[in-house]
Amino acid sequence: MKKLLTLFSLLFTATISFANKVDDLKTDSDIVKFIQPLQENFNYKDAPKLIMLSSEELVKRHSCDSLAGTWHIKNWEKADFNNDHKTDLLAIINWYDTDCDFIAIDKGDNTFQLIQIGGSSYQNCQLANTIKYAGQQMVELHTWASTRPGRKNAKWISRTDTLTYKYGDFLEFNKEPAHYKIDSIIYKTQPCFGTCPVFKIEIDHNGKAKYDRTSPNIVYILKPGEKIQNVFNMEIKKPELEELYHLIEYINIKKLNENYAVRWSDDATAIIYIKFSDGSVKTIKDYGLKGTFGLFTLYKKIYALTKSPDWK
Image (cartoon, rainbow, N blue to C red; front, side):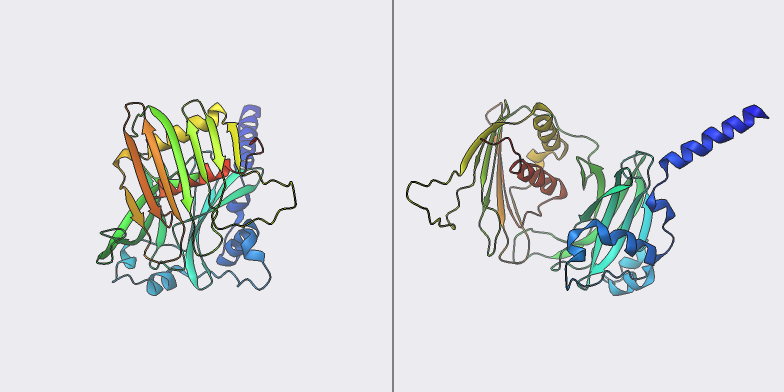
């Protein structure tokens, strides 16, 4: 009897140790209250309220030529997307009259990373659901996709992406990542109609990096003798450099298109050059930075480097 009590106590303790806030969520209202504090934009003055439609309302609202009814959409689902035995959350939230797919990942100590997959006010008919694939919990994102990205005469068809949580984000699942020998990376952005950051980063195979934030659209008014530093250097730490390389391999960058474009105007453009040790170069120009989920993850990783305090 004593052994049984001890075993029960251990099992109970283990269960409690993995429990989190998501486990306690029961209703649509609970979900909205949970999501609200996870993103600063939700709490700005005059920001619209978060609304959760029922699963039935979502399917009706996004008929998508009657396809939405076949996608098994729920307005929210619980799952463990990063295999850490903690419950994460997929929720479809209406904000600014747009249904957005959000995922809250438990990062420990009841803190959560909120990720929006896909979605913008210019895109319609995007709905997500959970799926078990290759022994992992993943996300299926259903949307309309262009048959000829960036072309005016493109046709729009239904498309489903299977996304997995890797490198701190959701990107296309790839069961056969490539293996490259990378010599250098150059990433640069071009101006948009607005305040898009304009910069260029060069990274060699040793991790030596150069960051140039000189912008043709900015005019400085300087005092006599005053200088503005726009070019910086640093050495990227080995783990960060290896993560970039592994991400490039995981998304099979050599097999991606050379040009991508969203179907709206006034957005930013990213251009990335990957030089390999055999002398070959992969160049991708991406208007809107939405070419693939994997590319978008790569752009965010590189942009995060600009925030490093180690630039000199």
